[in-house]
Image (tube, rainbow, N blue to C red; front, side, top):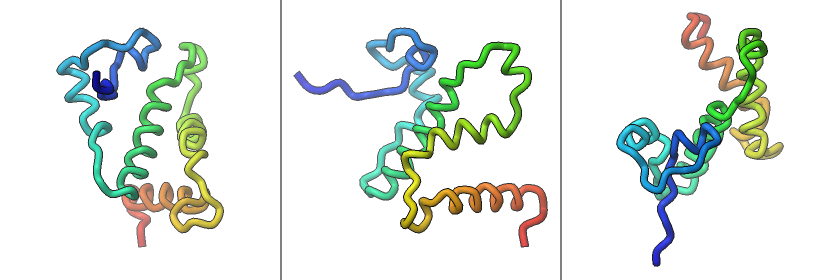
Length: 114
């Protein structure tokens, strides 16, 4: 008997039991997260994206706390999700590289990019 192909299931993300078969909604919704590439570098990038998305989807704040959340809370959760990928001596994988990337993305959108 072959190994079951792993897939994303909204029920599982909500803390319920995982479905035996992925429904059409989840197939379409999670398609970008389930795209696998042959390149190790691309797979690593996909793993980081998937970890961030899964971590953000699993945040379970009560309504009172959620009403007080802001961008710093999102940043905190992303920091938790990517911490295992940080490498002090690998270009593109340091904490400063991540922060530079955030600042660059914001500058592209707010008109401050040189």
